[in-house]
Length: 394
Image 1: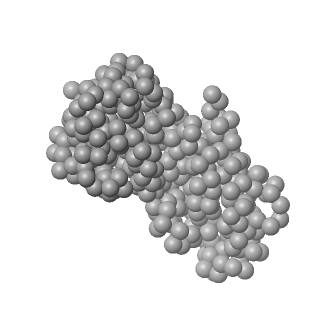
Image 2: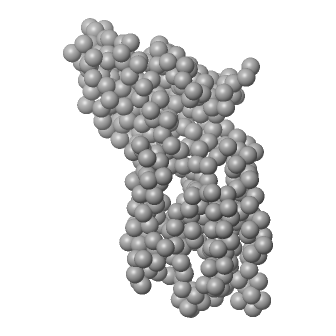
Image 3: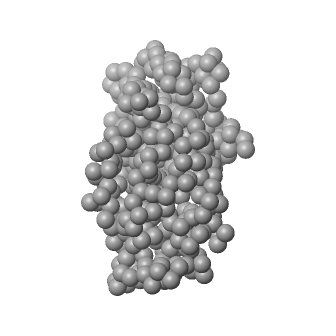
């Protein structure tokens, strides 16, 4: 069977099992959506029910987790916060089981669509579904927190449905099925960005992510905690030099895990690191050029769009004063910038000039040998978010 590149396993309850929205999504070009719904399913039972379903669908490389409405009714005698906690813990265990085979940016946590107590049947009133209404908002907040913790995508549906979308106060009618399919189609249609940069990108990451959250799917190389342990070492979310960035992108392409349409890349500061005694750079000019050329050809073959970020400025006097293990020279930074710019111009690749913007912010930029004060990093994030929005006009 020839499956689309993206296969979404939809793990949910009767809202999923009924499947009208899934049938509509399968008529779009988003990918294949696999119905993994079961009426009455609770999120807290996911750790038992999810693993065999995932094993039965090895083709699934994306996951929609759409559970919780059955965990919240007052038929469960526990207090509301305890019901929420049990549901979130169930989803947490499902996520842990999925992560070895599905990348975190390919997992989407969905809140319930909502409830309409006025239209609820006597049976559902008797089960206490109407009393779950006050728990929906705190449950959505708990899911959002879980998504942030695990670096997942999150979609809050609570404000997007009204009484016209429900047939019995809980389940969607035909109009509701169309509404859910439309919401998900628009959500999945957002431009997707994968960001790879050095430790400078860690500084502006939160500002950039927040500014892009509404209109873009923004992902980056993971491992923030590991990277922040030592900003001078290329580990975790720190992309490192051009050879390391190239190897990372090659791995993602070869394993079909580079899902974003546009890849935003910077490397240079690690490349120009020089041995204080020999003067040898970590990556020579010629190898830097070759690595960037290889990146361009790799992403072109993978049908991905590339955006280049210029490397941020440095002051070698400040640098050498505070960093004795390796040196950087402004002349090398200029030379490597020119190599990158010439290559990108030759291939008509857009350039976001973070170097020029940062130098325009005044003389007091650095908090150490190369990293910037928090207020400077914040301005960098806002600048880059604006450049992204200009690049993808609505």
